[in-house]
Image (cartoon, rainbow, N blue to C red; front, side):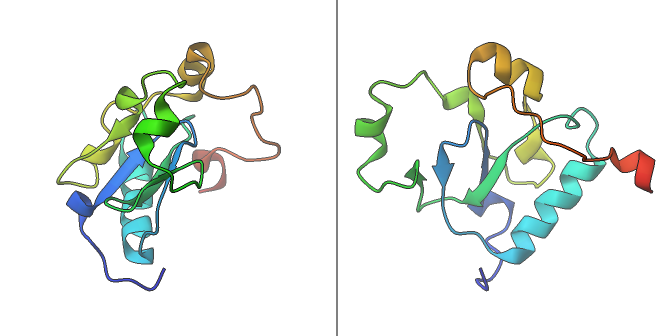
Length: 117
């Protein structure tokens, strides 16, 4: 969105395509840069969103009600006061697959960054 940056403390990173909320372009750019520079984040899929307005699966019916039949997702939500810190504890896609959080779809035709730079 065109909203001003909330800073790292106003952004959350999660995995499993569960949460969503509006986020400003500047925050998206800063998390993206942190992900490109942080070792251990390659082969990982995650979502970034502004904290405080989260919905689950796009529904605003309340997280507690929606989570009732879901596995514990607390380890898949990351908060920090730094953009790099938001990526601490990120699981790679293989680990997410083993936990049953994601499907086996791996995309098609995406080249590794080091192959194109």
